[in-house]
Image 1: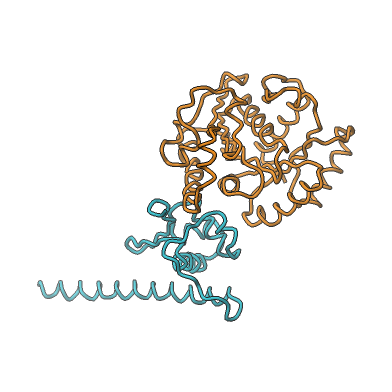
Image 2: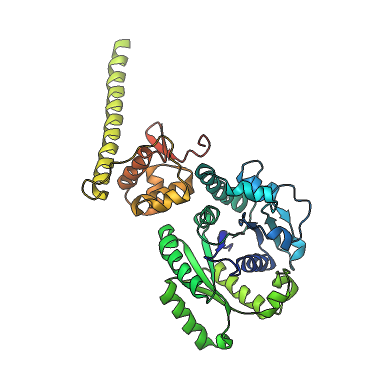
Length: 264
Length: 127
């Protein structure tokens, strides 16, 4: 039986919590499982996927799709060769040119409303007509239009957070005052965890229940602080580069939970 | 013969017109009831804007009961009160009231097709 196709948004309150790393590896994991996946860079203020994925000669950016100057299929860059297996891996990139960033930051409410419509339309054009299994939105941190649009359009939201106090407080507020209003299915990822005992099952379930009391949302996964991620200097698709790395296994477990609707 | 036809046809059209008017009246009554139910005493009247935008920040600032309806219509693009009711698991009459309220507030457009009323977000002509 084919599992239900989904739009997954990856979001966080603060920057540097690992959204892009998680988005990329979740998408790559799904592709590795034979799925048809597309990842979209919705961080129009600080686009990063174009350089991480080393794409050249991009004809249409995701900005163009939201501006209604091209259709969804035209922005997709086929990067299936980057992941093992016979799944499909596409990317819709945010334009990193300064001019484009300035243009995107000057949009008004009407434009943002239409952008939400364009994001929602992807369910029809990509999930249904083009048979995509997963669309992953890598968003911009904090409360801003492009991210909230992505959250509203998504079926499932992954929230990345760290142990930093300002991040914990902000994430808590964001979940209670924003996510709950939109009644979104959410899973929390604790990233950069320093506790070396985290793999012990007892420790894991203790952390999981702590997450539930603090954030009132289920935990999707715990990611320890890996120096290899910093050392990778942007070669972030661990699923491809380091298939046996613990991080790859952690993301595979997250993907499995999302796929089987086990986040609760 | 011709006279007979006119005689039978006319009452039917008249009845249909009456029915349609009653339906519209009913919807308006539902709106009034709902607005009264959800406004604290004599709080602000419903603001009517010609083309208010239904963007996410607006969704956020809406009262919970209206946000649920507005979110559902955002997902459907175009729907009847019955279709929205299916999504929100609330009564059709309640959704009809909220949808009409959103129309009055300028966030939605309404279009009648036969006996059905369709509600939609007018994303194209705005802005």
